[in-house]
Image 1 (cartoon, one colour):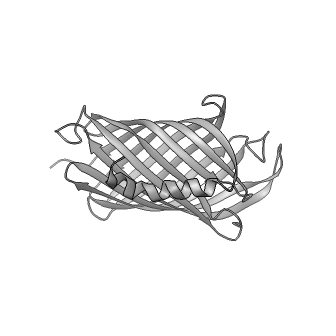
Image 2 (tube, helix red, strand yellow; image 1 turned 45 degrees about the vertical axis):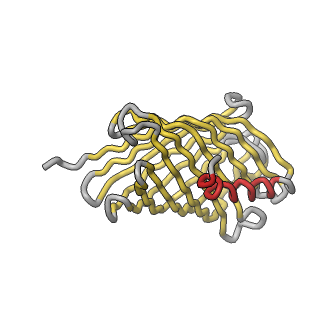
Image 3 (tube, one colour; image 1 turned 30 degrees about the vertical axis):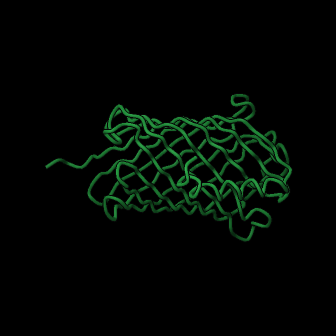
Length: 249
């Protein structure tokens, strides 16, 4: 890893390692697959949505999460956009609800910046989520009502083209990003730090408006108990589709 990458991601990985030394760690191997779409309808407005499915336990043994998200975007300019929307999450049986899925309703708001630095692409995103998770009575029974908390997420991503053409159709790029998530609200006691996600992989530009990302993600998550954590090794495959539906003049 060169010096630039270490400066960007090294402190986060060191902090993650340090926290892990004091926890009871559960390890997991997962696969994440997903589709993401951003469609620009006019100079100022657009829509976005994504859907993804996550497995757990030796990559393919059980399902972990299913997420569907949709929203409306407003373009402050070509590089900066704000958005708001809603996500529905199905949390498949897991620790604390081993025989029942837990539904979650998740309104969200975000701002995203995308800039070019030479041939490189740099993207930053800040997202705020309001999480309404169904209460759980026991391992097999949901309870009435919801547990609520906020979660703030910051993601920094860099894409380095491997072609002299830059990021162009039928070319590969190296992609690396890190996302830190923090919980807050009255129900949060032990896990203000929620999780850190580090991803590194390849992006293949299928055409001018879409690309595929494939690579490895490492997730360290602090569980609500305070003394337990989950360490996940993840194979991630996502398809990104960006459509410009503005009328050409």
